[in-house]
Amino acid sequence: MSGATTTGTSAWRAVSASRRGSAHGEGVPNQDAVQVRRVAGTRGDVWIVAVADGHGGARYVRSDVGARTAVDVAVRAVADALPDRDDPAAVLREVVPRIVEEWRAHVAADAREHPFTEDERARGSDGSATAYGATLLVAVVGGHGVAVAQVGDGDALVRSHGFATRPVPGDDRLVAGETTSLCLDSAVDDFRYAVVPDSAEPDLVLLTTDGYGNSFAQADWWHGLVDDLATFVVRSGFDRVADELPGWLEESARVGGDDVSAVLLVRDSLADDRVLTPPRTRELAETSEEPAVAGAATGGPPRRAGLVAVIAAAAAVLGVVATLFLLGPGRSEAPPVEPTDPTTSLTPTQPRDGTPTSEGTKKSDRGDTEGTSPGKPKKKEGGQGGDGKDDGGPAKPLSGQE
Image (cartoon, rainbow, N blue to C red; front, side):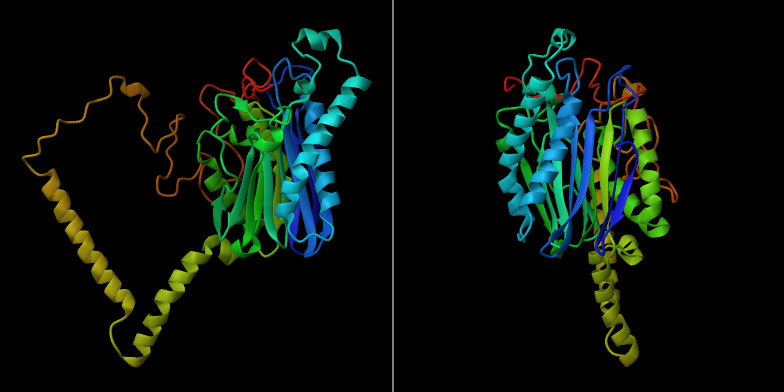
């Protein structure tokens, strides 16, 4: 999908886009795929969304076909199983074996109908499902909340109670370019799951292939991104976000080098006060204000907020005294060792490109000034990054499991 697709319901709206990575050689297609579908559910309309990332490298010669097959099979399988069911999370767990089975059947049929060429075999393909290898993220979003199933890398981000979350459990095996995959025998068991119930107030969901996150210089890019997206939606409207998304992904594909695909879903209830002040913060503020008003009106005892301030000040004084004592004469520790190569030393709050960031907010390295477009990455050190999926450094299935 080269452009953006937008549709809407009374509860959620969705937009999706995909862009080919700049590091791809001539003739190499976009190996990502994305699909979005709205279906009727027991609690109103439900979105079924999926993104897939075909493996790069010489032997994964048909991973673009594998990715397109993955999103098509996944969305169709979930859509068939959802009617009259009010537990999408359970549906996802039930249909995952079917998704894997149907994906294997489809790629096997493709191999029979389109036999592997001599060139494809010369590039390392053995004619098996490995040639079609891909990761998959599929989610169901609606009145129940958000349910996600994932195999392989990629990111599922959910704004819940006003804060950015990454609900899908991590996988320690996804290191050094290796990933779980639909083409592995262990694919069904390798899926990870997450549920964000409606009671957790999810109002923004972003599913992306790993090319998006890899285009950012900071490891915690997603914290600031989710906040920026929510603020951008409130200040500029969802339609503006839908218009801008393809351009943001184009920038990430250019900077990171890898293909980039994303689906963004936003709840209509997303409101300005919920963006600027997270719910828990508002609750604390309201709690502290109530006794203040009562005290001022009745002339009664001092406000609770004032007592808290006195206690906080006393604690601060004690902290200063303790610090002076610890840093005073008589300490026997050796002084810190200076780095041997200060030119390569980085502070915790300074990324490799030298652009300072705020340690307190841990925003991503995209710039945090008002008006900065969310989703626009800062270029990684050394020029184009990405995972090099087509130039000898591909994300590949786990060793020994193909």
